[in-house]
Length: 178
Image (cartoon, rainbow, N blue to C red; front, side, top):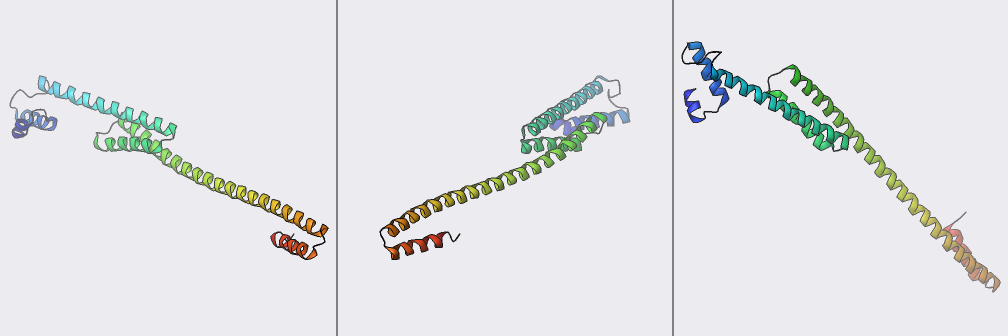
């Protein structure tokens, strides 16, 4: 413990172990009422509160991302909270936040899947609409071509060029047998 404290005097776990060993052995000023113990306790409480505040901020960022449809960002934040919860001592306030994060993570995953399905449906619908437009254009072009050919056939018929008239009529029937 002493070597660890010499290397890093602010290392909280080493200080806690050193104080505990001194307390058990009855050495030094370490006792539950000592100033050093109180400072350590306050420092631990402050760090715990800071971490809870960081978890609350991550939860809010995750919810904001979820509401904006930014599911990747939301999932990252919720996963971060779950990771914090693994390494912290359990308690009611932490467990509540962990459950909220887990619930929101599941909702985020479901919403992402739904969004992907909706996007696939939209893409399929747009492809179908594009095909329908192309088919409509093709039919309009075919109608124009048939009108031109019919006009030519009429002209050849009026000029009494029946062979050419029959050829054009055969083209018309080939293009549109109906």
